[in-house]
View 1: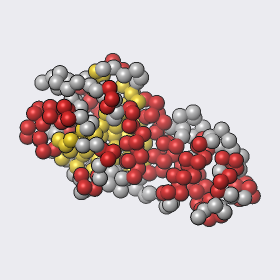
View 2: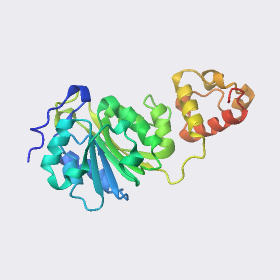
View 3: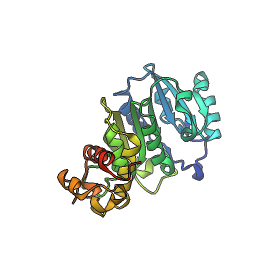
View 4: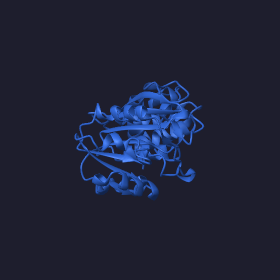
Length: 266
């Protein structure tokens, strides 16, 4: 069955439907090779190119959620035995603990315009999501997997890598989508770390974002609002470094330093 003929791609939803079934199978394999959860949640199933490999898998139960009513109607008709597993809704606005009460793995060909928001939702719900495999705009995928001292390395890199082991799986060309996007895509896998970092999340996010907001400045200047004495930054070898030079482990250490000794930590 050609699942791409009855659902129109909608620009305002950022839809680009994958048409290459071998690539779809490879994306799903990136999940199933690591999946240990009872449930899988697919974001934005669209024409069902990933869904066709997910629904038949007896190792887990797949729930598909889409904000596009046309897609939901089509998938319910295409998979009548799984109609109750196709939901109309907005992933970003959903209470995931109500949507699926157990832990679950996350998969999807993510719309470019909300991909960063999906990552932040993943991080906020990480206790419930031990695994995520997703297709992003290549630039975003590279950012998530980036190493320190590279131009791609930034806020998303540090925050994601603090909680998940991130692997860049493969690149997907523009011509295998309908309509073709203007850029390439990248598929990544995030496997939650067994031991979460022992750090106050709000402080950690705040320090990382503040440091990268002025990424060209040295940390002593970029983090002035926290009023940490230069001697302490010097002692811990942070004073002459910039945000892009620090690993997520060093950012955790820096956050603890700011929490303990910063004057503006109320």
